[in-house]
Amino acid sequence: MPILCIAGMIGSGKDTAAEYISKKYGYKIVDYASILREICKKEGLEVTRDNLQNLRLKYGNTFLAEEVVKRIKKSGEKKIILTPMRRSEDYEIPRREFGDQVKLILIESDAKERFDRLKKRGRENDPKDFKEFERQEKRENEIFNFDKTFSYADFTVKNNGSIDEMKKNIDKVMRDENV
Image (cartoon, rainbow, N blue to C red; front, side):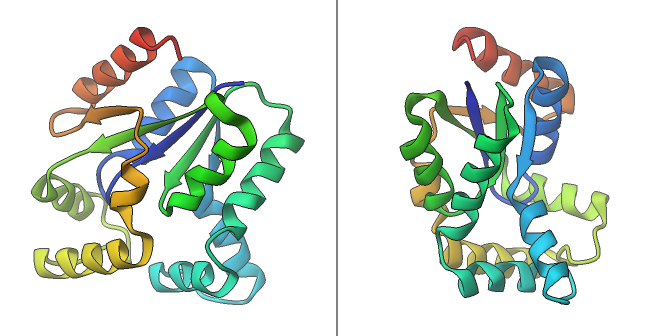
């Protein structure tokens, strides 16, 4: 059972990459953020970036990955994408459970490119200017320690160009690595 983990900074193209792999290669997406949103709603909290981050702090660093492992086992799916990898535990716990079947793909994009994408997508909680973007990114890195998580990457996909270019880069990983 291949399990692909998708990681990257905000606006790097993680969701686009996961959706593409899902559609083209038949992988089922298990979205960590969706699980957090479910919990947020159950607790009667507004679904904001801060509340989602605070839930992780409230429940500890392993609860989300442990929940994902349970869902994978129940699903019966043969090909799974886990996204987005934030904390190192999000990767380490499934890796401990499923071993070498777990591979991490890091989606990389320049900060300016990522900020421009966020402006275009226009989600309510996205930063309004580049300074806010940098503050948010700094805070997330302090909370999640992305450097450690990203150090587990088996593959890196550059995403500074068009969606079609990113898809070609993903296809190369999928083909060359027989994923």
